[in-house]
Image (cartoon, rainbow, N blue to C red; front, side, top):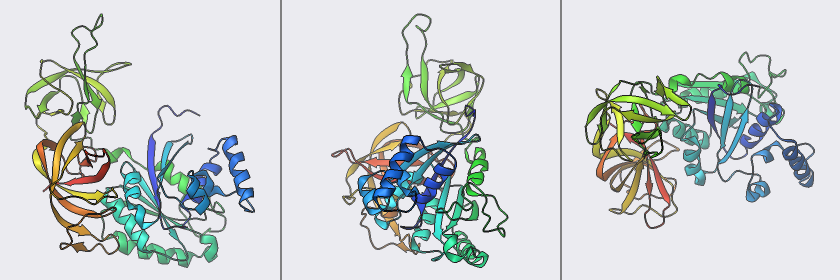
Length: 420
């Protein structure tokens, strides 16, 4: 099968414990024939040892020893598979409340989210929590898979009741595209193949939805942003005077002869060439990795950003973010952290916790100013030097930051930038 030009779709799975996330992914891999024979043999032996009658599909993703022993997911498990139509990266995230940070990590780069709901239980607190995070991270497509339909006799009424519950929930959030699929991950109904047990369902099975999701429009093609990662000076024959600025395009489109501005210096020039290892390009766009040369000799280094002359991001030292605290140790007021934004690294401190969010009720708490693991809050941050930022809702690359503790070198928080 030819995959060279097929799109890559990243999606995350979320749901309560025992809703069947790992089983669903195992079913996707198994029915789409994306499992190697040695993997299949190992899982068959483990299933027999654990006393299962058939193949335990959940074991395909439960890679850690503790996960296999407990039958739960406690870390983000990434899996890759491909069909003739598309390539996929799956982030299988844990369902426990104490692993909210893992859900944020797994969903941060996702194009789509699969949210599982047990057909017997309907919308529960974990459903609200994961939907809130999907909305917070601006995931454009949410596939609500109502699982274990076999345990409610494949009832259309049960399915419709849960759809109504979720519609009421999603109307309060910023989720653009919500689709509902009744499935049985254990038996394979509507996962890869259409179910013969639910002829009342007129939609497509899950894999078909994943293969046909339109994700090109999810990219920001308007705001041209090129964070410089390094300067290329080959110093070899044929390239003695070559000075290229290498990095990955965050958004927008760049072409030779475009008038550009370099930030934060503000110097202007024109693009001379856009180069790759395979040759020069007449056009480059996100998320391509390229080297850009300019007509003028400008002092540019890592952390600078090349943008269109008439379309600039905001340059500021004071930013507001929705922050998810990822670290075991609580946040310390007036402590300096390293802030990483695209290829730019500066020092920063949390000036103020504006409010914390209860991700079960969506209530805002303005009294509690502490910040512990898995907490989500709106915070004000001050940096030592200006950052070139966009709102996260407009640009997930230039609108996101992470905080690192200098003493331990641990990533302590991830943030989504809010602009007025």
